[in-house]
Length: 451
Image (tube, rainbow, N blue to C red; front, side, top):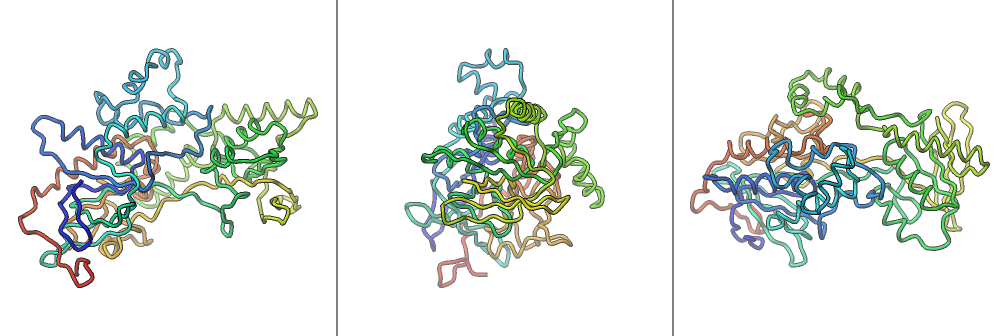
């Protein structure tokens, strides 16, 4: 891997990818397939991932949880149906292709799809450096124009600088907790569920409170109820009941590649309306089969007089604090009557969702050259490239953080294969060819490129 210490002159990469989740794995595959094509002008690429190995929502790989997206919306199929990086090729390699066909399901187990991601990532691991954290990006100027970006990366070997013509940012989502609540041994976010449960020491919990009304919340309730057969599991949400996800054929067209074009060109008022109309395809909704299973379990326990599954609906968690006896005191308030219910629990699990990382948070002073809209959001071109002022010649592409411009698919798997194909096309269209000999940063006394 070509690199230089701070102050040196690195080899220039056509693409540097930051993060190596599913989106940038798909990007690496697209680049590999392009480079292997007949007569292709290869693109030099390198990806950096701070995790020690590939991992995608490991804390929620519950053994019976299924994907909410068809296996055909894998990392490659919608871009290249002939790719040998497809989920079907993965099944063939694992000896399960016929078994999967006989299963007659479009929706694999989540843990199986994670194994597919790992299988695909391993096949392009020559393009990724794990255990490498990007800590900064600096502009490289020539005659007042930013022609390259220097990416500073920290690893066990120290700091190194890598130079790029283009960046592809795939830094993923960040777990969200309510204001004023910090994660601890007794206050969990769903993203860490399995690790916390595995590490739980005897005695088993007597009561667990789960806050939230979406898919992750319902899966947590079902899993904890099964995992701790003596514990009371209390679900708290402000709705009357879990709302089913709208996965009907017409509603799912919001995830079609063509829907991105429509959303991108729509007026802001229409964009807001579309998000309001179709948020129930993805946000705070639950698969109907899981809703039915939980209701049957609740009713069965009522009949048998062994109620362990409690639903505190039309309510909100209004206070939570850890107590001296190593437990948690949670206050749940009815939205109808204002009545407060105190729950003494061993754990409170927050299924409070995720938020995108600041899409340009790593860019430092380069971010000053990125254009924003009237609401302060980063402007993004149709090809997922951040709009910048004329002095920045490099491409900065976003895989996520583009919901305001490209719609609901910006952080979902549904459009990943198509999106990376569009980014690849843009990279090729904008490729300036080999860098002129002698191109280098103007460096000041600190070892950083000068402005």
